[in-house]
Image (cartoon, helix red, strand yellow):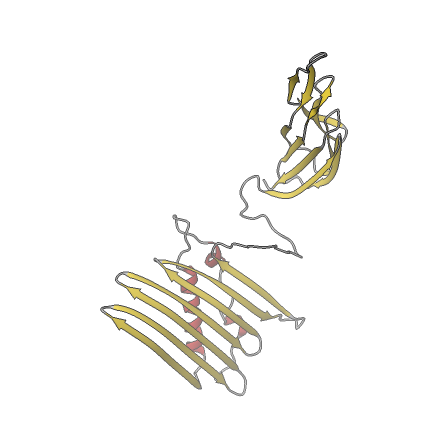
Length: 282
């Protein structure tokens, strides 16, 4: 058997496997076609020295359930390959659902684990690949997911998070600050989208005020926007009518020049204020 060229092994799926979608938004068959292509490559390029195929199947009135496991192991003077694929499937009438799991290891240079699921005419799956670097400095690992992802917990990212595919105005950074009568924060605006600002005043409905101050937002000491605090007139049992301040929210949006900027919210009197600053992705 000739040496296997590692560059010829279809370990990493092409871009369209992860990104191509049908008009309905569901994954196409690209993932399935690529996975079957990888399996075909192994069979065409490696003559199995040890091959085992087991199938457990049940059928009643045309309804079927099956579990199939195929194992291959191959070594010679120059190469080594180990692979296993297990498929669990059921069919009832015109409905078929199956899920396959694939493990491969080739020449001590690369490994791969893949899961492919087929339900209702659509495919989805996960591929994890590890490949030794050509310069011998280590290995590169890649996880491809063709499915929606739900995380019930914290997500910790120590590297970069790219905003490719984020919805318009998705936040790339968020900052917040709070105080009694004023609060300030600073961000390094990258210039990728607009700055959206939410300013909030908690209000002091149990305290008499002499007037209605503004809830104001400024950037770098220059006022951006302002609104009069919500209030109501309080008529005591004796004495003049008094003003009492209520909760107030101010929403505003700007597109400043890129760089460091300081944003401040003030309400003229105490009672608690908070400011949120969002930088959009687009």
